[in-house]
Amino acid sequence: MIEGRLIQIEDLQKEIDEFPEGSAVAREWGIRTTLSVPLLKEGAAIGNIQVRRNEVRLFSDQQISLLKTFADQAVVAIENTRLLNELRGSLQQQTATADVLKVISRSAFDLQTVLDTLTESAVRPAGAEMGLIYRQDGDLYRAAAIYGASPEFPEVVNRNPIPPAANRLLAGQSLSAGWCTSMML
Image: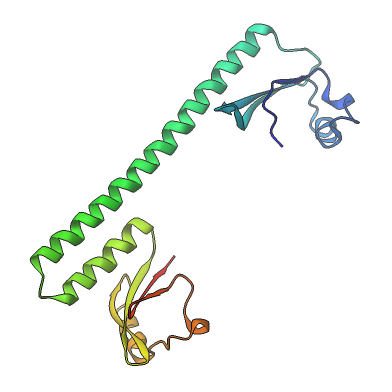
């Protein structure tokens, strides 16, 4: 468990009762003094920065202050990275949606083009290798659009339609109003 407080241990090798595992590692690696500074985000510890010495010598107030500054900057960098990744994901989703809408507006009477574009637009942002849209045909589901598959795959899929029994559906598929979607992650 990560604690939300600074912890400095003068000689970790001697802290057998309080830190038995850490003490054993310290004896094996020759570690003596340790200092752990938490990475705090909104008061909650999300990690820590730890420095160690191979000699028994406490870290100075100046060194602790510097490490606290590094920890604060690390939290800012981690949060900025998370926000940037969310923004990229949102932008990919918006781009995919815009691409689909463009195709739909240009191909209002060409369902296959729309389905192909929908499949491709779902696969790319999801980081999947392949995607399929199945369409209900009587009691079976047949592939209506396939993206990212080998040239032979559509023929295999078309020879093997899927019955709608829940125990036969592949992981990641969902049924809705006569349609079944699947992405291979």
